[in-house]
Length: 365
Length: 76
Image 1 (cartoon, one colour):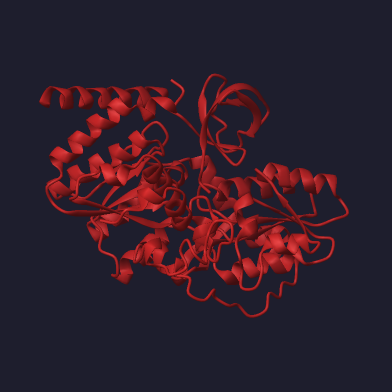
Image 2 (image 1 turned 60 degrees about the vertical axis):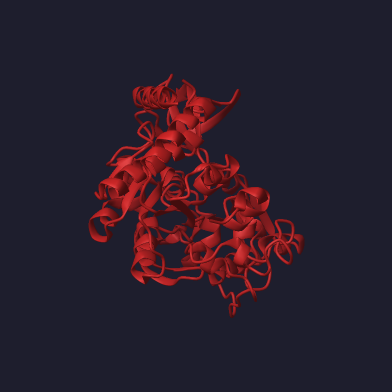
């Protein structure tokens, strides 16, 4: 088993689809939280293949997309500090903040380097002892433990020139905020597989218990997604919402306890601003006081100035499942992957980028 | 952002492992998965193994899919 192509077999997909078609009687609205699932659903034409009883909505599970302009502006202001090196994952560099992007700042002379891993960022810090290196910590629970591990590594190695701008976001609080807003009615969640690899499926129990909404944790191959829809349909037809795992090879109920321990050692929850959704309590992570010398917000004076939202962009509503990219007057015209206005068009997992790339897959129901 | 891919652990030295991803060998950190052993498949995200994949569960899931496909065939 290679854990990849086996989970893309067309014959098995047809079997799952015919089971779903046979079982789905009640109309049901399911949200795939994660942008990675949106990509799988569009790439494999899953929306069109599902029966008309099932409506799929895309959720806010794209870390770059939900990062507020005020936070992007902070990163850009940091990049403009002379001599400083910004290390970041590739997606973040093209996202426009209020006035400009890291990419533009780089063209104007800022030292912004795309890395694959915090391990690369640590290496840059080691190789440039006379310069400060700031890693842009953008990501959910999947990514936060890798950033925590880099801070612990820097501490152990005595690296005094490495710090992190922590813009991490946590998934359960934003789902709670989404459900409390009462604006989007849902029967089920496809829960994010790689966030759950860290948090465990237990992180979603409040959704079934307090909101009566079915939850299934899914992997990212097409059969994984179809299995999660099949399990959600079964729950909806039975009328018994609960949390189940359709990705048992990769996710346990209790999660990765070592990763959770490292995350808890370095970070603590704080309120965080989400694009289009405002400030949500305990939905972000900041470095604990013991690790303040690795916290870019404490090490540097950052003054990003006033923020501004791009005019006409509806990313905020798209992220909440209230609108789709087709509702946006900018989509495909003023806003394209080459010239993006909003972050959902920049990130490879953003809804707008996915709709744009798989155009025909974007049919509405 | 949360993209992660399965990789086969080929060798381990301290907290670093050499893993194979689709024929390409690269170095990843096992700091989040100290339990990983040579021969295991791990899920790799941004240079870190974030979990060890469970071979038996993977095979069980595929068996279930095959059973569902057989039942669907029978109904046609």
